[in-house]
Length: 217
Image 1 (cartoon, rainbow, N blue to C red):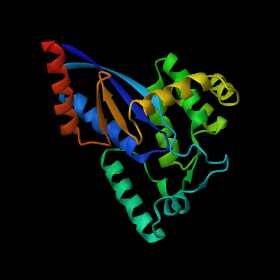
Image 2 (cartoon, one colour):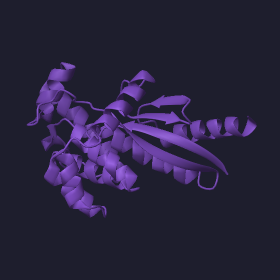
Image 3 (tube, rainbow, N blue to C red):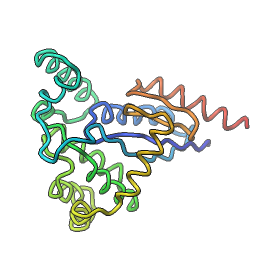
Image 4 (cartoon, rainbow, N blue to C red):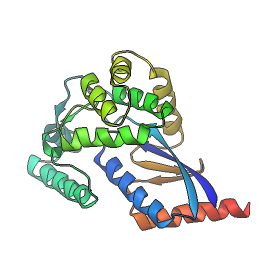
């Protein structure tokens, strides 16, 4: 069975990243027994300059994209429907605030050393889109860490410190230099970049193609 590395560049505050991961899961179910995938989450900040208090999401998106509130709400509801069709909880998506996620990424980097990063990513997607909580709040990070079997005290302590800051900044810079300017972005085997939350069948074809290329080398 071919082995293949996927770097998934993502932000907890990105709805399409949650959707993109679910579609990747669907693709991997199709490829079960064909390809052994090793997944690595990589950090990206959609709202790098956002102050700690954040901003109401519709207000933020209207200003960012230059659209009126009704249009922006409709597009958000379409995203919510796409997410919920995949079994994701986006019930709080319209109540959330645009938040900076740097502290969440630092705690996620720590979770990766415990082999629990995917579980914590999914829990933070749920916290943000389902519960409209700030995913970088130390208390939220503590709560969600405990939910996925991690040490809540350690997670909160990291969130309140600067641990893993250099690691996160280095990873962010690495993938920006690799051409990632929007998320989600899937980098296959360190060589191929797929941008956006592509349908599962597109991901299946791409993964098979890379695996076949690797097998012929």
